Length: 202
Image (cartoon, rainbow, N blue to C red; front, side, top):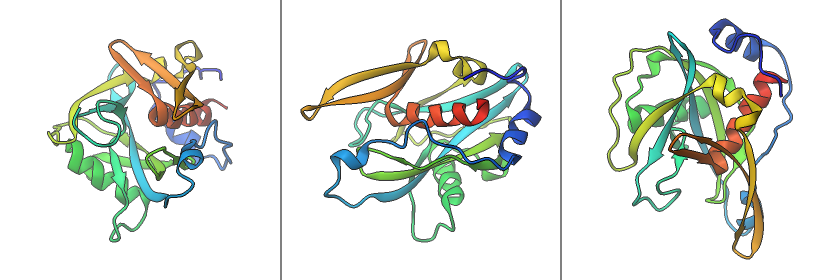
């Protein structure tokens, strides 16, 4: 993947989603390999791209340590779809408002990325949104320990991407990772991030 000339330009970002292109995902997850006997439930996350004076950033959350799923891990705000949700975008915006207090009116939905199946049994639709500051975040203390932002320019650099493996439930599981300072972005979040970066740079 080659970085574009300007990764700071929100017009460039909008143009990538405006172009009629079909993206072949870098990864669509591996949850079906471990959860073939369980129902795969629909969910959505918001991939918040924040407009900052120094350039675009991507906002992540760190989940609290006591949660049953993905405790302490880095994630995008989101969750399972509710019967009243009209679509994935509504799920993602609702969950982001509940988890970190981002007002839907501050988010310009640009589009969706390929669905990703997690080992916890969700088929996740990542919804990419351009977020306009100022952000007056209110974190759900039960689910979210903290939020942080990573420059999009850093994320677009292939030198910062890793492909690792771990032995899990008796089988090798390969996953993507993007370390950033004290944060280790990996697993489903990194997989969805790889799909975003491929979409932006291919």
